[in-house]
Length: 491
Image (tube, rainbow, N blue to C red):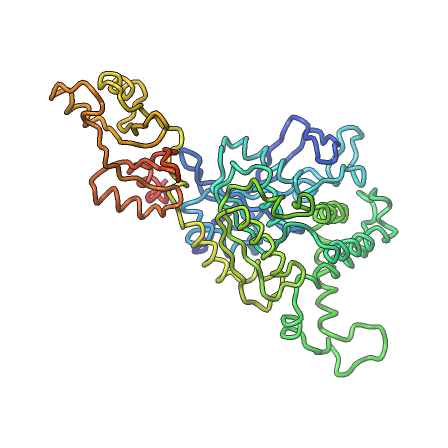
């Protein structure tokens, strides 16, 4: 196995037997989702990260397929010791519905006709893609994702996850993306779609088993690929160098290296992607809009995750100002958000190529664990003024060793432990108020886990109540939880 690689990885398939209602109101019959996983899911299923792919991506994000010599599309940041550390995290990547890499899409067989859907496949949206992914996550029995991450269209899916399922994710990593598609972005996608539809072999989407519309798809890819680059990167890579010539030809043949490069990108793309999927996915991108009443702040009002927003200095397809709009909207909603603009000449493709910067920024964000990430939320408490006998029975019945003591107004006034109960019995005390500790060491949900651990060590205690601004107890952080977190690489 190559050092730092997840090795050989198979593609798996989840077949969902019930129909999926799409945002358009159309019904997609039982569907299949292609996915790959890396690392191991821990016992409490709290270490899962979903990574979402961009327009032309697929579920093969890292490692190798049997017989391949080229790894997955984000192998530089997924694997042991990398940003998405598979020694710690269980990483999942799915092929979006509407795609052509195993998930149900226009090239799939329509159960009503026994033939490929073609252009009869229902129009899908980014929200539909996310809802389909949610079906797979539910299948795994995961109640909350540690993080959802992605770049470009993958970043749109992350933002949609944060809006549609705000309680279902702790962290969000959004790279080179936006909160809505702009007219310029829609315009480039429309040119690509028009190139495909204008190809006579497209045949209204019914070309499977016939001559494929490769010329239209290649042209669409050429147009799209230009937007992924930057003027600086193209100048550095090609300049005005000629392709196989000593001088210009004064005709319409290929003169420049940049022309030859684009032809190669277009031709290569037609061998791995379906033209109809290109139509459907670009349309989903065009429809993407998280604003509400024209306001992105309103649209993101219900989010609960902590965010890492990364933009690219030379990205003119999804320029930094769009990331900064998301930053402003999230900040206005008092969300925890970290923002960074990476310096790169690679343009939009930097999210795939700047592995050093991405590994550093994402790795630091994912490892910055706070108390709220690991605290137990469903906890037992006891009321002030209760007898020791009732308190003891509560501990025995619920199997806990710590009970925060609350006032009649629900504020934390103390804590009692099983050791306190044992001493009370030996001393013939009757009331909880006689034995509970009133000088309670507490933690807050946004506190770094290392700070909470130091408090426990300094005071020789094994649990801390977690309180909010009103002194209400919202959870409990224990030594055991911290030990699991520190040792999860051995799971």
